[in-house]
Amino acid sequence: MERTTSSGTAVLPIPATKKAIARVALVDVKETATRILADGFRQFGIECVSMSGDAPQRMQMEKFEGCVVRLNPMSEPIMQSARNSPSNFRMVLYGLGGSTQDAMSFSRYGINAVFTEPLERQAVLKLVRSTQMLVLHEFRRYVRVPIVTEVNVSTADGKRLTATSVEISAGGMSLKSKEDITPNQNVEISFALLTLPRIWVKGTTTWRKPQSKTFGVRFESGDERRLKIKSWVESYLEC
Image (cartoon, rainbow, N blue to C red; front, side, top):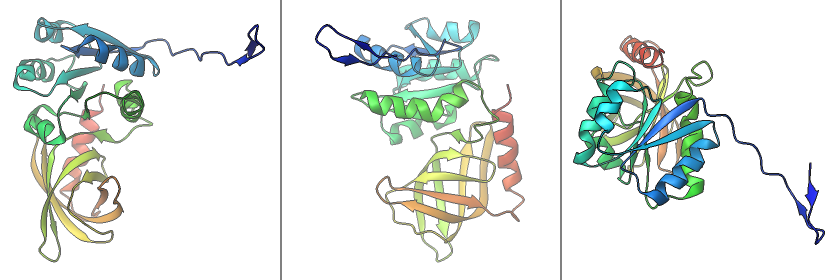
């Protein structure tokens, strides 16, 4: 219900945020960035927990649904501790302050998404919205896994290009590349994902968005190698 101030101006009520049902660790994040990230996650019922030097130890002892770490070598022990933890190895791992290329340097730890700096509230909300179902374990409605890794693409006419994965599902994946590629092309792609060794699979490009430099690949149904990807996705989404 609206209320009216003494000046007669209508004031809309502030929407209530969801009760926190998941936790995301913010490791060595400065105060200003912490406020922006915490506010963004809070909109989706996700609580942020700030930590610093004791982060690797806490990753072994506490349960978190996500973690935001800076994309630099100093954060590697934290990533390693998270992925080696029985409770946290499936957590959503967010990179902070680096580029996609920086994220690929840590691809063995399965960086899921990257917050670019300087942080902007709308960009933070957009990224959290696109990943929050995975954080909240609502897998039946969210069957795509955000992940950042290098993908090699070969087209039927012999063209080769390098792309970066955005999301992957049992049936296909979305990628980002500066190279121009059109829909309805037969391709073969190869990539590696955490516990999944490098795999090759055939597919067809289905769409292209020039503005965001992204495109989609649908895996070829007759290529049995895609079943390994399906198994990996299902395993990743297990609680």
